[in-house]
Length: 77
Image (tube, rainbow, N blue to C red; front, side, top):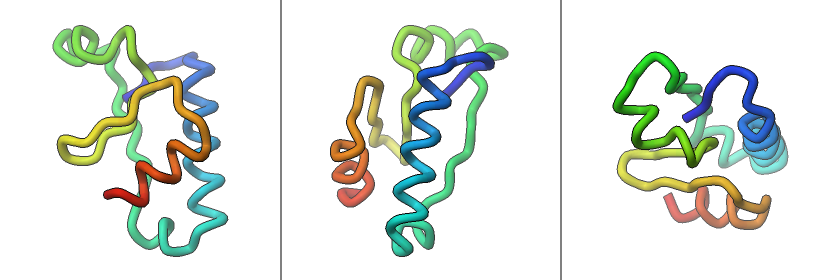
């Protein structure tokens, strides 16, 4: 979950792509799809104060997370 101009979202995206480049198995299993929350009141309500949020099915990882936490989260999926 993201919104335009969110520098924290940019940072989370960079971390995600770094791990995909470093871990070929992750690159085979995951891709990042950006969901703009600004156009949906329900998404704003649910994620507006928490973005960036990574979501896979019902599993979420909300900011603030470290590279290690992101790695462990992806590995757990």
